[in-house]
Amino acid sequence: MAKSVDFCVFSVLVTGSNQGIGLGLVKRFLELPSPPKWVFATTWKGEETKELKELACKHPNLVVLQLDVTKPESIQAALKEVQKCVGEGGLTILYNNAGVWAMNDLQTENAKDMMRVYSVDVIGTLQMSQAFLPLLKKAAQRSPCQGLSTSKAAIINMSSITASIELMAGFEQFKMIGYRCTKAALNMLTKCQSLGYSADGIMSVAMHPGIVNTTNNPAGKVSVEESTQGIITVLPKLCEEDNGTFVDYLGRRLPW
Image (cartoon, rainbow, N blue to C red):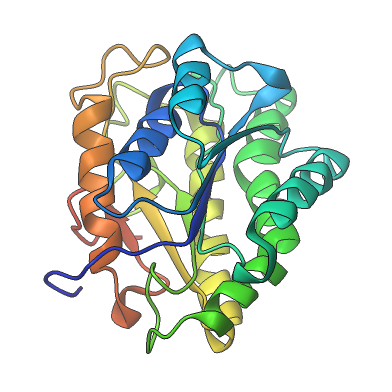
């Protein structure tokens, strides 16, 4: 990982950004000394929060889109809107943040819940990456950057430390069987993307945001601001050797 570089991003799309970590990431991108020309925030079924609406009023470079990552027609509609804005500049960063979970253990885990989590966190991420690949390729082709970097073109997949088979972090407190299996699958998808897309100049990294205190997880010990500020500090430091790795919001490499 590089020590320090300027973070210059033409465009970024963050899924699941109506609240929590996604909204925090949108704020951090807008606060950069040289913010992206385009920041796309997506919400599920038009669930824009008051805060996101106010941000959109303040920042003309922020575009709020409705998106359901499990529905190809919804993804295509969002893609068309992004294309209209970025043109030949392409999409620099696709941040696949949208995710759901269920607090089921080995006894209570069930097919319906497990499939719902997998459909959003893994299949949704795959479908988003497939749809936006042409725009990521455009960004990479137009970038003057050498090697792989987030300033050139990158897919960042929001993973979790609970995906680590070696660590099995917090298993006694949070069994979350379907969620753990799903995030482990997401890590494999990230690794596959890193091997499949690097020739096109696109970096792929799995990111653990910390155990973040949100509406859905009040027990989290890391604030949204601390997590997203850490991520926005780590992103520009990622370099070619980080392609296909699993890192946390402080830039530490995590075991698979």
